[in-house]
Length: 350
Image (cartoon, rainbow, N blue to C red; front, side, top):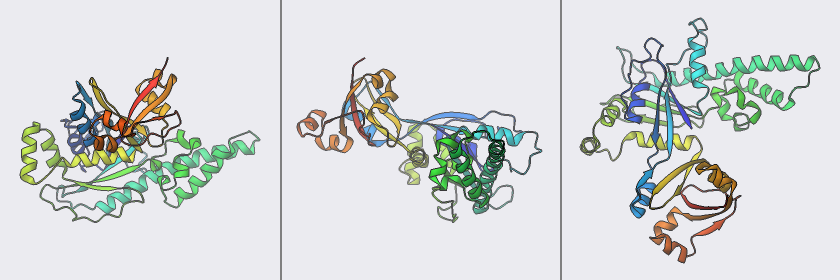
């Protein structure tokens, strides 16, 4: 799963990327628009996995992961003459599964921030980009129908609805039946993608100074990007001391990573043992047999049963053996819908 980090030039996209990843990517990488995106895979902080690791003391502990892409600065859709920069930006953004929009909340070169304007402009940009694509495709489909060619009536109906909503300025993510329609997946509509807003504020600023009315269903998190980036680049013990002095219990980016994970509709199930304790990413609503395939296709193909215990039940019992004696460990079939925090041992035969 991939999340694209975007925002207007100077908003601090790469600063947030560095804070999330602990990397030292060049914050001026896109000043000329020639650099490729920065990429990083980030582990999802999970106290449940930490507890399981303490319980089993494995040789290896593996966290669930989310990939972040530091995409080039946003380009206004109307500026079609910028030597293909718009097309390049859209090409980089369309493959991502979700969008992390970094909004400036600090003074830059004497210019005061206007987060609400930036949020509204960016949302309008996504809607307009989608409208251009939807209208072109709809026009082509309508011409084919007039010529007697057999098209997909469902696709035509969905596109007509999408164009109507986009013309009204409504992002497709606000309409799940369109955002998730299989017939429209190939268009990779930008306004259909889940989105999170990160308000990047100055080190000396107080949280809550800016009031933003985000688009419907879009969460907003405030982060002191530069401070978090500097702490992320320090050795862990030294960074922990600084956080203690500042009264910070954990990196602010941890909440952002967890929110990103949730934004993608992901949950985690766990596998445990002496060799490895591991968290696995799956989409909410995934059945047991498909979850087994995330580990290995052979396990999915030869699936027999899933031996399942809920995390809270295991913690209450103290040991797996005690959980079994208490009747908390159960056998589930292939159609069982895996729950967040399930600890699973798959039985299979290939």
